Length: 330
Ligand code: COA
Image (cartoon, rainbow, N blue to C red; front, side, top):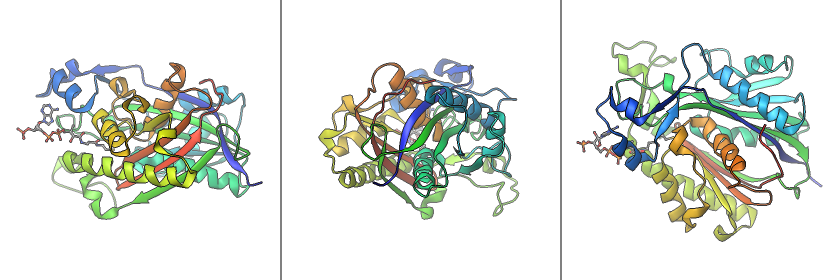
């Protein structure tokens, strides 16, 4: 029988400082009503200066190890697009912080789709017998990328980290990662990007080029269409009907995106899992954070058929399915 990557541990971490919409509306031309109505977000967690992506990732990773009841893994994948430095990757520093110096460690940058991309990569490492256990962390500090003066992006993003442990197991076990579907479209990179500071536009006279620029309406439209399309592909590969899905854990970009995607799929609204009200969009951290919260509050239970779907800058998007295991968040 072929080897599967089985989810056996889960953990998350949010920086303690909470910034609610009322606080934002004191310095930006916006309101709690507008942000809630357009996005479903009420507050977000923000990492204070001195707290980095590596710090958040290590906290989540530590909890995932405790949840799995293990002290070490063979490999660590960090899904992030806000590493501590432009070079090197941050994953080795996370491993060191966890006392796992020496293990295989690399970053996966597929922005908000990064967690689903990293799950697929981890599954490949396990299938190829490169690793028996892999920690997959989604961690981002997107509040460091947004222009503090931009009311179009500031309300949307928050910081955080979520982590899972995958171990080699059997495809028919609860927690075994099922089919995965991944895509990208670099022609549309400009819809959501930071223009300057990389190897192409090394310097810019326009300070806003160093911050995240977003064409919100176009991103919204692509997010719904691509997540619905990709969800149909994995469901088909898994042999599941839409009606079989107990929980849809999509990237927490906007409650209206999640609802519209579910509607396009013909899925009941109560299958949609969302914690965006208190987290905002935490990029690669959003799916594992939503899994963690849903597991803690009993929304997600062992045996549930779970559909994961993500969309992000790049553009990138992808989906995966699994039957939820017996797991207690660490
Ligand atoms: N507060 C108040 N008004 C705001 C505002 C804010 N924070 N941000 C924008 N507006 C204004 C706009 O200036 C515009 O005003 P105008 O009509 O006078 O020009 C109006 O609200 C409508 O803006 P629009 O951009 O059309 O609103 P929208 O319904 O598309 O909602 C987003 C904006 C950003 C919430 C929405 O497009 C979105 O969520 N897009 C996807 C973003 C995303 O998920 N990105 C990450 C993907 S991984």
